[in-house]
Length: 213
Picture (cartoon, rainbow, N blue to C red):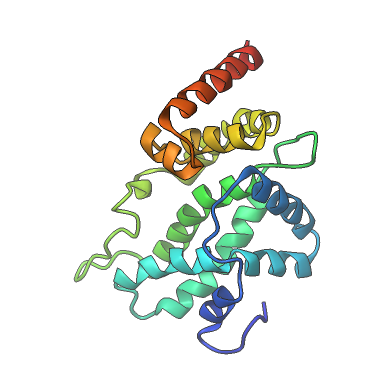
């Protein structure tokens, strides 16, 4: 990889990336299309990494709390690129009418776990100063990456269904199913009243029952 020759290459790349975007089904579809091409095209692979660099850099910043000696956070950045390739190769596209889907959601759940595994193998746990868990706040360090990959695959139905809903209903469903937000938060982010949210959710639930049955 040859994005930047400096030690701060990931931070520089993050400044030019897509930033801290909110993942939607439309963005996931775009990422999935790129990811499929990236498996056989190093240029597309690096472009996809650059697109995600802000989020990658944010995941890496958690390791600043670790005792990395004799390594440092710049070595974590290198491991992040390798973890990205691990995720790219491990992703199984979800087929859909408009093309592959699922890479964005897969990346957001599996990449932090793959990166943590790589950094743990890099430094090991030191007895004199144990490294704190990079994901202790959210508990993800207790999950095996393979188990999380299986969990991500259950999103296939959700993603496929969201593509059949109108954009407003699809956003509501993803805020509930993916972001696990409550009614007040969903209504605020969707820019609708709570009454409108419940009315729309009844329609979404009826569609889910029909499609699942």
